[in-house]
Image (cartoon, rainbow, N blue to C red; front, side, top):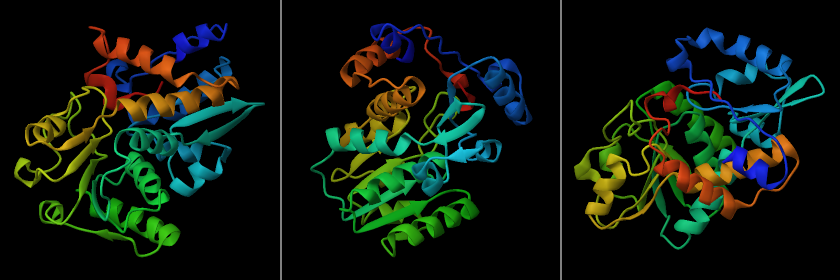
Length: 275
């Protein structure tokens, strides 16, 4: 998406994938990668699982959005400094507004409280139409940390649950912000029986585009939102940070659609990349 959009603007851009799993790197290689890419003249980096929070301590500054969310998915190298941004919030907000703007949101269950989950929660609560956001994560400490952050920002509209299946029975919709459903983490983040016909279901994963969760939801007649909209919109916002140029979102969506059909698109390494 980035390379094709840059070409449309008359810019020469190389967008390189640094997949830690494929390259045999452990997480300790993160500081070295930032040092090397900055030294080599990269305009910046996109960051994904599992580094969206870990990378913060390696940066010089954060945008207001990244500071509030506590996660970074875009780094700009400027004048010898590293500035972290978060375009996941705006990306998810735009995707949700385009695909599910009219769904009921009195109670929403969110699965996953990591960096991506922080972004989707901030986006949903920022729309100011959700009465209750229920958080669930297999890591109780991570869930508690996000809960505390959100309560401070949005008040008592946020609560925790250790029983997502039960919470689903009173929820209008379900958001998956976990990596469960990626090629390397197959399966569903919640029991299939918990998906009910009245639910709307959103998944931020985009490889594969139709996860097991979305397939089950569609089988039951639920309205669904896949991860393509968030992927395109966050990329468009990141493109503006990298280049100073406004991206054509429709054109980037066309590029994404070609990418999704490409036989060599990323799969198992997708959960461990920093590009």
